[in-house]
Image (tube, rainbow, N blue to C red; front, top):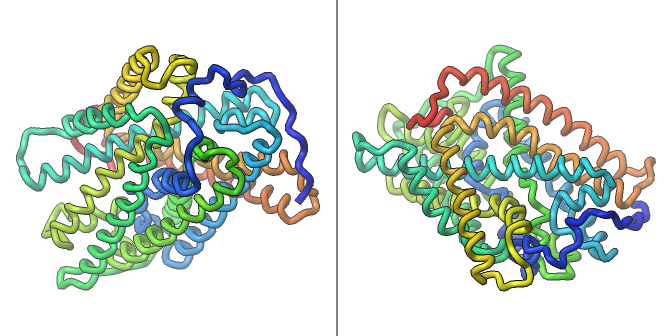
Length: 454
C-alpha cells in the first residue's frame, strides 16, 4: 500500500458547511457503528432478495454460488476501500459527508461532482419510486385475497402508500431513522425465514412442482439470461449512498464503518444464501422473478400456508417504507441545503414549513410515477445497471488508487484496476440486457395499469 497523497483544498462551496442545513439537519453526525450497520442493511437487504432464485435459474447452481459469493466479496471490499478514503480525508481535516463532494475533491474534476449527483439522484429516486410501487402491490395482493372482485385498483393502493410515506418523510435526519432501520433489519430476517420455510414446505408437499435445473436451450438466450442474472446480483448488492451513511457517524468515524459493514454482511450471509438455495431447489427453472409468485400461482392452490405468505407480505410492506425513507435522504439533503436555515432550530417554523412542503411534494411525485408506470421495474433495471456499477464498483477503486497511490506493481493496484475493467463490462452488458428486456416488454406497457409488468 502506497503512502496517501495529501488532499488538496479546492474551491467547491459544497465543502464549507457553516451555513449548510443539509449537513446540519439531514446528515447530522451523532450515530454509532451499529446505527450505520442498520442503515446499510436497510439499503442492501430488501425484498430484492426474493429475486435470487430467479438469478440462479439463469445461471445454474455452480455459477450462481460463484457469482453470489464473488459479488459479495467485491462489494464488501469496495465499500471498505471507500470507508478508508473517507477516514483519510477526515484525518486530513476534510471530512466528506456526500458522495459527490468526495469524488470531486479526490479526483479534482468539476464535472465529476455533477456526474455523481446526477447518477446518485437518478438511482435513489428510482428506488424510492420502485419501493412505493412494490408496497402498493403488496397491499393489492392482500386486498385481492380478501375481496377478489373488489373495485380498488393498483393506483389506489399506491396512493395509500404515498400518504404514509409523506408522514414518515418528516423524520428530520438520516440518524433519526436508526430505530426504523433496526426494525427493518429484523423484518428482512423475518420474511426471509418465512419464505425459506414456505419454499421447503412447497418442495416437500404432495403438490410440489416438478423440478428441472436445466438452462435455456438457445445459446443466445442463455447468454442474455446470464448477463441479466449477473447485473441483477450487482444491483442487489449496490447501495450508492455509503458516504452519506458514514456521515451519520459521530466523529471520529475512523474504523467504525468496518464494524457496520460486518453487521450488514452477516445479515446478507444469512438471507441471500438461504433464499437462493431454498427457492431454486423448490422451483428450479420455473422460479419466478419474485419467488412469492411461485408460491402463490395464478392457477391452483397456494403452495404454502396462507398465513405464512400473508405475514411475509406484511413484513415486506413494512420494510419497504424504511427502504423508501433511506433512499430519499439524498434528495432531502439537497433540498434542505437550499431551503433551510442552519442558524435556526431544526423544528423552527422557518425550517419546518419548507421541509413539510418539499418532502410532501417529493413523495407525491414518487407516488405519481409509481402509479403511472407500473412497468417501472424494467426502467429501474436500466437505471440500476447504469448507476450502481459506477457508484459501487468503479469509483471506490478509483478513489482509493488516487488517494493512496499504490505502486503500479502492487497487487492492490492491479486488483482494483481489474475490478474496474470487469465491472465496466458487466455494467455495459447489463444495461444492454435490461434495455433488451424493456423493448421486449414494451407491448405490455400501459399507463396507470393495475397489473405490474414482471
